[in-house]
Image (cartoon, rainbow, N blue to C red; front, top):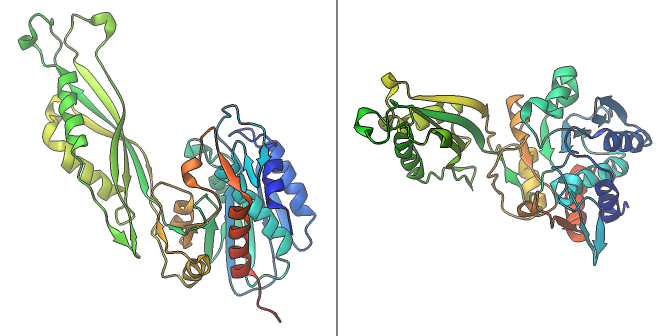
Length: 360
């Protein structure tokens, strides 16, 4: 069996910050081409390997190979069964498990497609998974999919949708000594921020998993330090809304408009402008394969509180879920680390689920 901890260390020591994944893609391509029975396709810095055994069902196993920029943790360090280093959790631990499964599962119960893709940690327009889908959509065809995002070895079902939008308030410029002659757009933006801060808890339960929505202001701007004597006539704030998979993008926007509309003056030029929407994914735990994964994991599933590429598969009509090694709370932290036990447990669960029963 592959020494998963050593493999994670090797992957950590192969730099792969987003947009610079050529070296790790070449390493994975070489390793996968050495495995008998795999068809290997490289598209840019994305590598896909798949079996063609004529099985009745096909399962996609996917993971991204890029990391965020280093924070003094670019080299791996193994101590007492734990590998420290950039991307150890997010998600070179999952990539190591994928590669080990590709080496070991020569007679799986399903035809398998392993997808290693670039540029997950940056804007979605750069997504390697989307690039594969655009160039060779047939490579992503499947009956079900597992994304090996770090979940602590627990099935994290579906994912939240993401809406990023800018609220702009308009006012009338005036001298600050005579504010009644104007209308302070920055003060009016304060009412928008107060309304957003009052966003009520919404916790829909789907397939037994509780999703928690959130609305957060992440940037604001208005007025000018160089115009300190002027009542500002424009202000704006950027918001991020994480919404549950019982809503689509139109329903999410309607909820935002209902919350913020009462404090906006649309005839005066106030506006809500949506910059980006990423669709959510339903939990789909009624699907037999995903239900079998939950059973094999030995733990109750929980909602994925965040967005992942299970959304991409869901849009294609492929039931998908998140299941991988590593503590998701350690993602992107300088002290990112993963243990041998976490890696071995995830590998064992997936191998038992995917391997053909004894005798064929």
